[in-house]
Length: 330
Image (tube, rainbow, N blue to C red; front, side, top):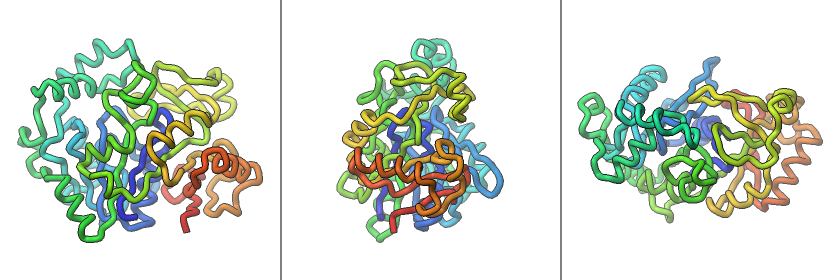
């Protein structure tokens, strides 16, 4: 491994949470660090329960994995503490002392002003703005977070120094990046691999692999361009009509976009690709665990992705469960 970065290749909703959870269990990862903020939800289906996580890393499913929230993250303390209780991870989850805090005033401002670009209304943009203005409250300022405080960059780099395995869990998608996305219909931060490493406090020379996650089709929540967008009725007919984890809003849908994928690979220096929801595109592949079990059409699609994008597809999601994965790394 030993340091693998997971990022989204389109507009979020690619299934990064599932991939992180699978890798944590399969590779027995020592630590996972969650970047970003509560405007991005990662869904994990584990032991018959569906978790929509916005703060706690998706690797919580592996009980020996240490869980961290990055220095560059924006924390809603109520959301964090609720998720800690729901996942039962107290004692192995930490928040960096310099993570900034989302307050009620940030949420109010976001909901009053964010409709122009279709934000989630979770207060993230205003909270980031306060951090840039150097007036934000930090995790170390909140008594309720005191039991969870840590120097996350020091701990992550120590684990790597000792030969441990670390996952960096990026949020949202490449084209929601403030820098590289479809501005102004973007989030308040850079979402690419180099940026999430910076948020976590991990230098570029420590990264072993960058896994860019694509869904077998493209979805997008809120406003902004979406090339090849299907009508709602057509998306429903194809089984592509989904709802966002955080807001419950319907996701707009379009076929897989090779041009966007090529650019995402360039921006993130992808070494591996993950393709999720192949079972939605090809229902006969549901639950497959080996490449041989995939239909000829699905195999053809995966090979086309590899030929056009020139990066190996090592992980293929074939269902909602954590272990519904074709793993081609070995």
